[in-house]
Image (cartoon, rainbow, N blue to C red):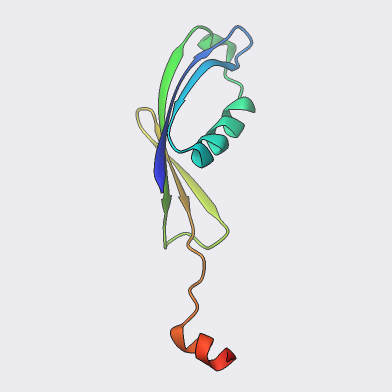
Length: 95
């Protein structure tokens, strides 16, 4: 599906700030939403991060579910299930 890279700093309140994104705009919106809701420990103040989110379809994940895996040192894989496939003969049976 695609990759999103994001660079950000942790502000004095533990929130991501000075965010810089690279990637597909649809996938970016998902990452932005997660980061806007995130809070980091106060000890992280002033720390900057470079994070990679890799989005992919995974036939091992049930349709409608999402699996997120941490990929050290600074990546995440977001796997989503594939929609069910209708057999070819199902279409002819409906006609």
